[in-house]
Length: 293
Image 1: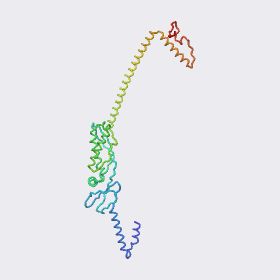
Image 2: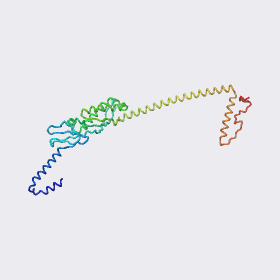
Image 3: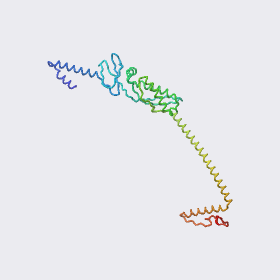
Image 4: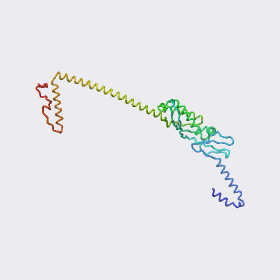
């Protein structure tokens, strides 16, 4: 287009030939019409909405959806809003019910209310999220966190998150802003409180370990008592058996001698023992009655 204009200027720089005035007028008319049509049309992309500002009547109440639309050049111009949800992270230090400092970070998905774009523009402009979200998030966080102790913020995190979301959604509606999602992404405490919690946990673990050691000592003592009672009863029964039948002791000697013989026989070393030592002197003048007649 620029090259054609240069050629046109070079050709007619010395004046227009006869009969060319009409053609030039037509060319200028077509150019003006094309420019007017171009300036009269505007496009709203997907995920966006438009409102019209008029130099005569100000902001119009109609909201325009995606597509091609008409406007009056110079008198009207479109204001385009992105109505898709946009993430925003907001951090705020606040105090708990027990006066502990808590650092909370929120992830917020916010978008403008499409049906209220004229009012939103008149009140906040295009950067509505920058103007509103930080202030209302800090306000809601401080009011909700102040209802819980520091320990409750950890154990009841889901309930705290739901309360923050409910209050924040209601607060944002007052500014024609829709919050699609509100979630706690980070929750941390001061270094002093964290150290105190760790010390408490260590003390609890040591107390549990001491309790376990005491219980184990009691169990071991009970086992020893039971074992001692069993040994005493066994000794008493053995004494009664020997008293009633003196041959019982000699029978035990024979069984011991048999066990010693088995061990020596299975050993790879050669051992020489006297038969009297092997049988533990059971060959004495007394005779053992095995019940065979």
